[in-house]
Amino acid sequence: MSARSRVTRWGALVVGCLMVTAACGGGSDGAGGGGTATGSDVPDTAAILQGVTKDPQLAAALPAPVAQAGKLNIGSNMQSAPNNFYSADGKTPVGFEVDIAKAVAAKLGLTAQHTDMPFGSLITSLQSGRLDLTMAGMNDTKARQQQIDFVDYFTSGITIMVRKGNPDGITGPDSLCGKTVAVVQGTSHQTFAAEQSARCVQAGKPEVTTTATDSDSQNQNQLRTGRVAAILNDLPTAAYVSRNAGGGEFFEVVPGEPINGGPYGIGVNKTNPQLRDAVAQALTALVDDGTYGKILDAWGVRQGAITKVTVNAGS
Image 1: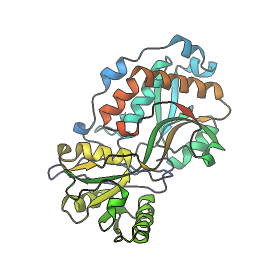
Image 2: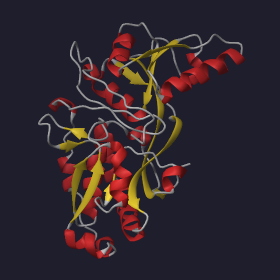
Image 3: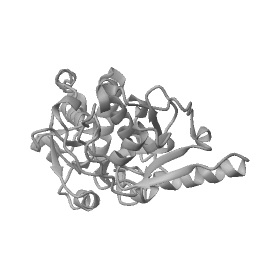
Image 4: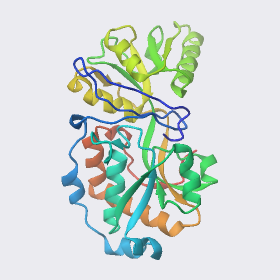
């Protein structure tokens, strides 16, 4: 998502023998895969969202057209659990980004309305005025900042997922030397694995053996059966899968900062700095009062939390 450098598609994730059906994705430059969740893997965040109250001062800072409409039209690509996807009914948007968007809207006295569209259409739809905002796991990058502004709300990057209990003792990239890792073909994760293998060899250590497949589900099966020692994936995906697959008993994420990390940003038309600043202030209020953290905790993605809201901070 970010404009993820590829589309990741993952089908059924094994849960016992079954798996959580979902999708996600995002390399260093974003675009996600498709998916719908079962009921059990969607946390109940209603109480958190109901606790958000309108801030009249922030609401007064909104552009008049948005305030009069009473809603934020938010463009997304509902293909990427746990960021944004559809619940079991196939119609209701859910995800940690969806919840953050609802909370920001509520703080501004508005409602959030999500419009599902192809990832590649988001920026042009924002520029044309069809959307008020975009929120789709899109990386804030210098190149994109030439087109739109970003209010940064999450930090993602590559993470290492291992079997529960970490039997191979993997603590970070350097401990992948001599190990076999799984990646999805054509992703930034595959590129990083090759780069890390070269670093291992340069340091006089065994290379990293990479097995590339067409889907995360294949990689998860390989990890569960011990054919690989680790999977490289984006932070939200890895955190979500490790939390839900097998009731949280199959996998875990190796602690540490995301590799090659960068911010996800809420996109705002560059001609509308008033809306950008109102959204940034609303998100800041949610970070400060703990609502933001509660949402991330509910979805199991606290590892990507920001502590300070920034605008156009990506590189």
